[in-house]
Image (cartoon, rainbow, N blue to C red):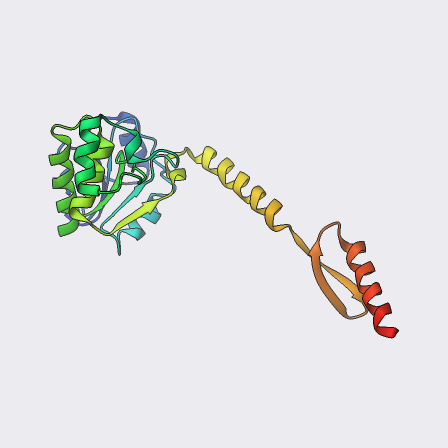
Amino acid sequence: MKGKGIILLGPDKTIESKANQYKLPVVVDPEMNLIFGKQLVVEPATEVPWDLVPAAWHFLERWDAAVPLWRYGTNACDVGTKEERQRTEKIVLDMRVLLYSHELLFLRKNAAGEKLREAFLEECQDAQDKRLAFLRAYYRVKPKLCVLPRSWLAEVDQRSKQDARSAKAMSRVRGDLIQVEIKPGVFVRCREGDEERVREKFEKRKGRRKR
């Protein structure tokens, strides 16, 4: 089947209702079969960033899969049992890697997408930590994976606050530049509040040149 849709790994009336608002068909399938050309495979009770989903469909034009990072400060070596970490390390080699939020997995229906699905299901069969299971599946298949920022896991209003905080922080670091006329027809750019200091500096340089 072509088109786009939602594969729910279990019933969730909230997600089903919201998907209906966005005119996206929903199939409840714990086996996560790739029914659509592009699908969002989502676990029940997961917060779906509906406003960002169209961007994910676009990513799947050139990527086999897309998934958000789980946490920025937690690596594979920090989760799971000792035995499962050892099992994962044999495949991944370096456990100092970030983990992914498999609860919100965008998959394209192609050979790589099918292989990733099959490998993930295999790894989940006797896994205690599904994040390590997904990591093993990813390293086994090596599909073209588009890694999405963790903000995709936040609710819409939370993402807006995060974006606003980021913009404010960048503004403090960069400083908002304004244009100042230091003499008729000559302008320079400086941070707001530094206008007088810039003019004084220009006058001092001007005076030294006259000497």
